[in-house]
Amino acid sequence: MAEQPAERILVVDDHPDNVEIINARLSSRGYAIETASNGEEALERVRENPPHLILLDVMMPVMDGFEVSRRIKKDPSLPFIPIILVTARGDTEDKVEGLDAGADDYLTKPVNFPELEARVRSMLRIKRLQDELDQKNRQLEEANRRLRQLSITDGLTGLYNHRHVHELLHEETERRKGGGDDVSVVMLDLDRFKALNDTHGHPTGDVVLSETASILRENAREVDMIGRYGGEEFIAILPGTNEVAAAQFAERVRSALESYVFEHEGKQIRMTVSAGVASVKGSRIDVPDELIKRADEALYEAKESGRNRVVRASALVQET
Image 1 (cartoon, helix red, strand yellow):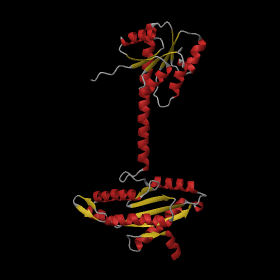
Image 2 (cartoon, rainbow, N blue to C red; image 1 turned 30 degrees about the vertical axis):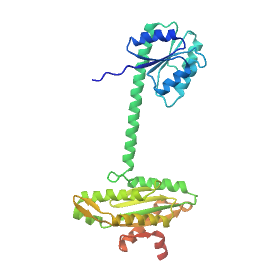
Image 3 (cartoon, rainbow, N blue to C red; image 1 turned 180 degrees about the vertical axis):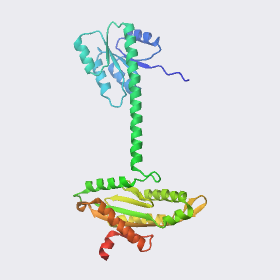
Image 4 (cartoon, rainbow, N blue to C red; image 1 turned 135 degrees about the vertical axis):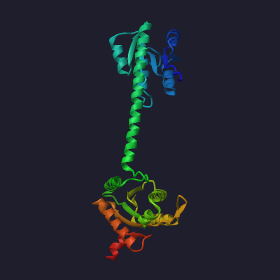
């Protein structure tokens, strides 16, 4: 088992004799001692490599221990570092000022070394407990982040799932209400996907779905929101995009998919996709789900009129 490194204590005092005495005492107890002779030097050392504990003299020129303590405790980039203030003045007012400055404990001079060692052990124990708590909190935050990601994404493709797509569309349309920018929705459905599964099996179908998701990502902008709507159906929410530009996006995807060769277990497969496009001005958005319905109707028309094509919802309105 690897030996644990010695806990590091920064001793800050402008009197070399005091530093030497404390250094000798604590070093003999197995602590690694670092020193600083003034407040500025102490802050530099703390920021370069935060110690486990600081023994901080109060009375120093230029910057006293109270100010050093305040700056350390207010720095959000630093971990929790216990500070024991050491001073020749032991009145209540000074102790209150020191604790208000963020100090965690207080020692008066002349230093009683058994008391010093006991307080050092106590503060380092608190430091270890705080570090463990911080680590567990970070682990919990990471676990929550992963759970959140799992709750909003489709497990196979990594795209947003059906529920989250609806949430995103509602959020996007709320943001744009009263604005002039268009919002577009593209619904895409792989052609004859059931026949692919029946012929080649679901593992091959999963490869097609996963690689189709990659094609969609490659053709999308960073602001676009891409999801798997269900089965072999995908959806793209395109902020600030009119119907013409959305249809161009859908055509790029259609063309890329048509020329793409899927490979699985020695089989080479080609697929096509049909797409329906709908768009609306932000100022005219009332029911976001209506936008999906119009895009879905355009998709249905693309399927009925021969597949492997892009149909715009506005064209259906003109026909009727």
